[in-house]
Amino acid sequence: MNIHMNSTGSSEDLSTFNASTTPTTEDRNEYNLIRCILLVITTILLLTLNPLCLVVLRHVRSIQETTKIFLRSMTIADLGVGLFRALPMTVLAISETELILGEAFCKVLSFTDGIFIYSPQMSLLLLTVDRYISVV
Image (cartoon, rainbow, N blue to C red; front, side, top):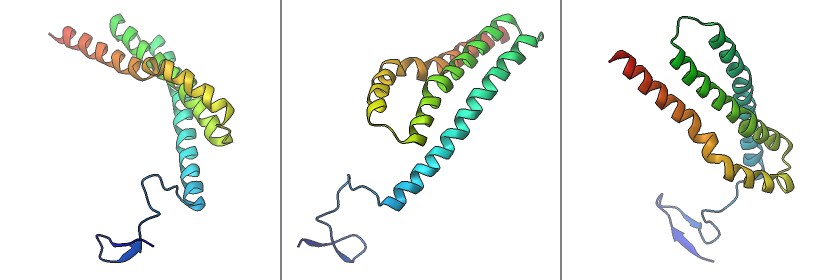
């Protein structure tokens, strides 16, 4: 038995505690429920608002064409994140079948991660540069 004094001044057995200690089942279930709710909300917003934005951009005539191209690019990149990243992650989180499908999915995501993560940011950067050039 290895008893040490911790920072609060109380004595407890610290020999079984480490950074990889798993949470209790109740904490894990609560965490999974909150994660699933947030993933579902995010996925629904990504998959409904981005196509709506594409439709609106098609009908708006008061925006310059180059700006519309960059906005479309950013919207399509966000839609790709919704379809190819958020939706499969939501399905895996809800079904909790990450054993077989999860390994293959992780390999595909590691290959395409750069495209999904950086393309919306690059579109936003190009849009900002375009607006700066237009103003100057």
